[in-house]
Amino acid sequence: MEPPDKPLSTALPLAGRNAAEASRVEPSDKALSAEELEEKVRRAGRGDEQAVSWLFETYHPRVYRYALARLGNPHDAEDVAAEAFTAVVRKVSGFRWRGAGFEAWLFRIAANAVVDRHRRRARDPVELREDSGFEERAGGREPDQALLVAEGDGELRALLDGLPAEQQEVLLLRFAAELSAAEVGRVMSRKPNAVRQLQFRALESLRRSMGEAESSDG
Amino acid sequence: MAERERLAYEELDRLIDEGGPPTDTQLAGLLATAGSVRESLAAPVVPPAPSSQVAAALAAAHRRAVRIRLLTLTLALIAAVVVAGTLGSGEQGGKPTGADRGQQQAPGSSGTRERGGSDRGADNGHGDRGVPQSPSLEGYSSVKGDVLEVLGSDRPDGR
Image (cartoon, rainbow over all chains, first blue to last red; front, side, top):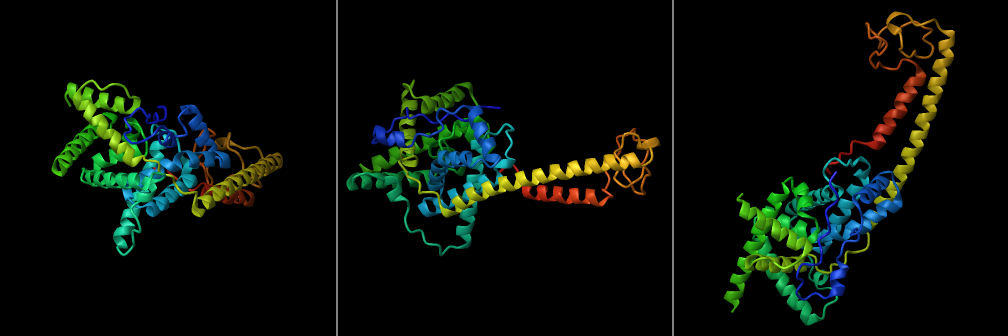
């Protein structure tokens, strides 16, 4: 069995974020070994409430961020995260450690819940989107700074939306769900190298588009 | 894919995970873009408190675990009763013969094979699994059905 994905480090340049903010998004399973995670999942499967709570507290923020990134609406994201965890709690006793890790399994459930939500939206077009998650992403910032973040987010969001679906999914799973390339590969049924290639091309495409946007603004 | 490209993909991935100085300007640019994406997607989003749906699911999971434990215990008790009954009737019944060798007898069978039983042919004592004929085994089958229903058909693929 492969170890669980290594958490995304905060070594990445984080322009505009202070250390306190960075520490808030660090996954809580940073020091957990593969065996410890397996044990937690086993215990959760046996109905151990503490283990289930631990899984929820550890993974809910990441599932929520991933759902928010894919749906763009905090209410939908909250629903999807709840649906995903309901499914996880219901199915965890049947989870078996066969190659694919727990996180890949969890995020596949979350991805399916997102797809279901998209379908429901398509069936029910009158559903109102009250906000776009601006307050969620701007949380704790001064109003001026929050506005800049929102504008920047909006532009980046539009550029992300313009990427091919697979490239978009790789970036969301890598940066919102904080999965490693290997785990993303398991979620998407792709090889890690194929994921790295998609990641490279997505970032290259975004970089080019951002450069074009800046030059047209200037 | 070309070896040089593959190395570049891996190097970018490593830098994203582990940090460190990028080896060329292209990687530096991509890393900066990755930083912006990460800042946007993994910004300090504070997820809401667990919804009542999730809380209910957690409680249900606990109840389910307790139910499974109770059913397992019941199953073990019934199995013990069945085994005890089999041993008791085996003493009264006749000696198993021929192809019955090694086959556990159903209680009340008095050592004779019932029509449609599971031990047809020369199975050298292994036999097939037949339909339980006695009332006590039917009870066992029913409880087993309950257990299977509780365990459900959950699959690890998340669907």
